[in-house]
Length: 143
Image 1 (cartoon, rainbow, N blue to C red):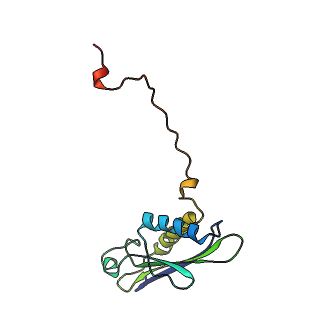
Image 2: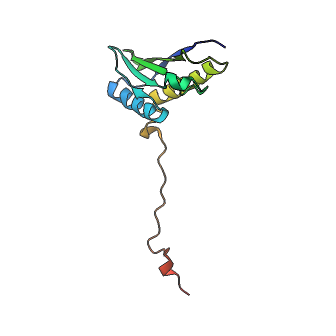
Image 3: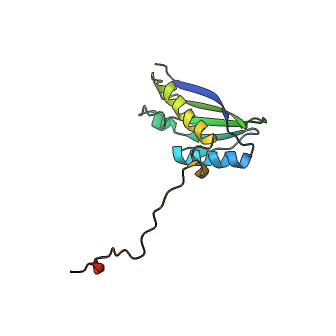
């Protein structure tokens, strides 16, 4: 255990797209799904935040501890992004599994950047058309 808590993990993610708009759309979907809010971006990074120091006082849930995510797009053929996730609070004690949990959170971000959560990546829903002559209302029951 360490006090105060400060855990950082970093990863290169190949997004497969060069479009800043597409990356931002994927990040917005990820942020909405996992409780992050977009913060003021700096010159080169997209920044997202989640959590509060006050929540860190009484929880061991890493999702409530202040977390900052920085995503920087590189200019290459693979649409590579450098993702850095930092979690910590001066009111929190770092526990054994925190690094693994933060790494799992970064896995979700990587999957999103690669398009796993986009509507195009989801399999098409098969919808069965109802039969037109099928009677299903109670008024159609014959005695």
